[in-house]
Amino acid sequence: MFQEYVYNNPMARGNMNHGTMSNQMVNFNGHNMAGVLAIVFGIFLIIGLISLAITVITIVSQWFVFKKAKKEGWEAIVPIYNLIVLYQIAGVSPWLLLIYLVGWVPIIGWLAVIGLSIYHSIMLAKSFGKTPGFGIGVWLLPYVFYPIIAFSKNINYVEPAGEQTKAKVGEVVKSAKPVAKPKPEKETVVEATIVDESTSVKKAIPIEEETTVKENTEENGEENK
Image (cartoon, rainbow, N blue to C red; front, side):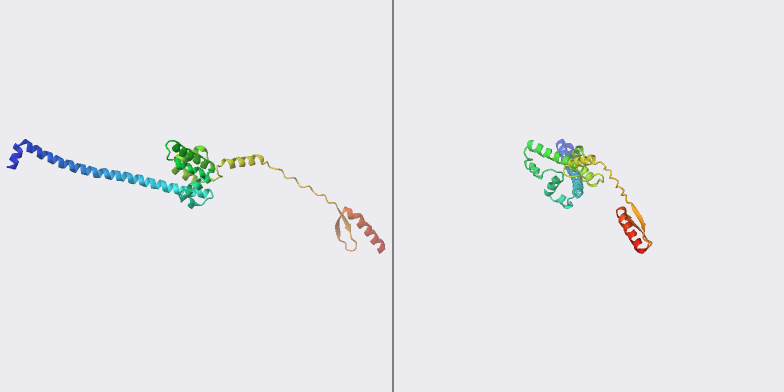
């Protein structure tokens, strides 16, 4: 009876079809939501792992950068204090870090912080004997250029701001000309050989004493006679 009613009544048949489609939509949306959540979770997981890897690489690289600059490695992992030491390594006054306090000010604060970061990166590059272009790389890609500074055998710490030492070394090298050592003068020693009749031993005496010895020899000869 019910089947005949549904078959003969279009409205009832429409209601049945609508209910079936509603159930299918609910099931379809449920499966879709679970899939979207899984994709979002996977994306955030990948981003988190990449960020963790970058952080670890940066910390390890800064540790070895500090060691190259004759600082303690543990200073690189102490918050705020590591920035102070890093500014000292680059020859930049740590007091300039106060500029970060105005970083919340729109436009002016942002530009001040960006300018300070670029300036510090360039000075850090110079401190290790590199060019300002290398410093821009340190600012843009610190997780790439810090490991280069840390692990490259061809990069050594010069001094804060670096260029001063380069100039001094260049001046010393240019001014330092090889000085020829004066040849030692040959001492002319004139020796006189006199035979002592009593011992028959030859003695070398200076010329100045020759006359005195001769006189003494003559006197001894006369006495012997």
